[in-house]
Image (cartoon, one colour):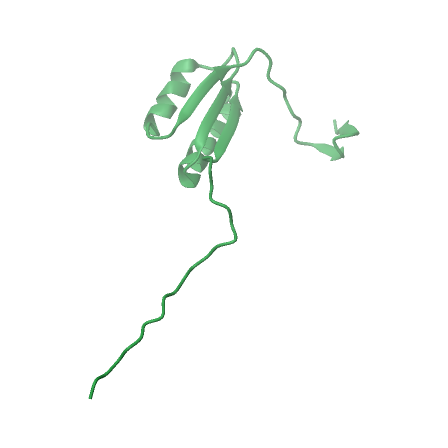
Length: 104
């Protein structure tokens, strides 16, 4: 008596297209305490997401401090670009971007 076994091939398909580009985290810092905190958050977030990092630094930021922080995450693909003007956004606003009302 001969035993015959048949194995079925399982084909796994996905509807999602392959990721072609690495995600990127972009951050701007002015060298303030909050700018440094934002840079730390961006570094950790880029590390967790396996993303690249783009840092925009104002004239007032400390380039040595940015380099020191980037050195801790040296395996990240990171770049730093100087910016002549930084936009400051007030966190307290009501309305839409079309009509910006700032609370004082």
